[in-house]
Length: 167
Image 1 (cartoon, one colour):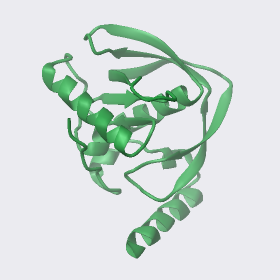
Image 2: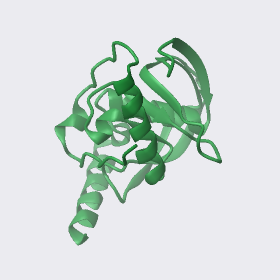
Image 3: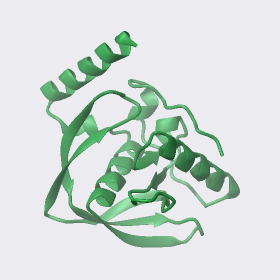
């Protein structure tokens, strides 16, 4: 397993929808393992393959207290989202040093290919739901800052660039 480097903002891959995964292969499992290792090294609650330059619809999420509970997903899609919203401070290693409070549905039902290559429908609630939605955004070529007003987004990116220049 390898900790992979992050694609820096504004790399066009972060704005490009990822390609669907035809089947869960040994290569996919190796990528998932690297993604979990990379996510745990951040530390963070989730990671989508485009964040590390792999343009496949792969994501991992682990919001457990004691790590080691990562859910590995290929081609995740939200089937149902709750009406009730939840606000959470979100960030991304692709745009380090900044974050923003984002409102997302508190619970979602997601369909994906699991590690066994089987279609699975799973309910996610709270932080798990937030992280899954955040990763699906990445797979669709979106980032959390796209949920902000144009002015807030511009200010957030400017702050990140200022921090990057400081080194």
